[in-house]
Image 1: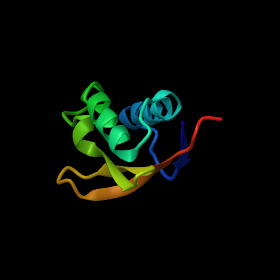
Image 2: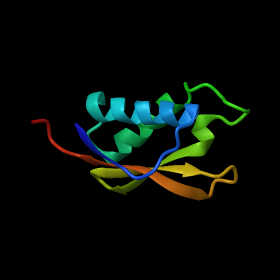
Image 3: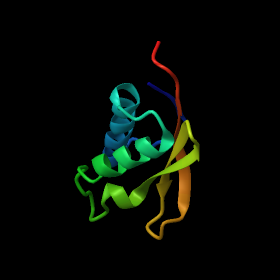
Image 4: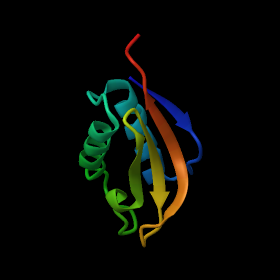
Length: 94
């Protein structure tokens, strides 16, 4: 199970879908390391439909901070970091 800390997200369709994906992954993901979480995220984000010709896999990025924590960032079209949306830390199941 992953503990989610929310920093910022906008109430736009694509960001709400990404937030939903992150919350679902935090609860039900098989990933127990940051690398597994990032790989799983990259596979699932491709399934989010495009909006205004901007695909979600180009606008959202997972960055590993250490073996047990990741950050989800919104990026610009050129790939620069825009703002941090979420930080997730792996905790053992209760």
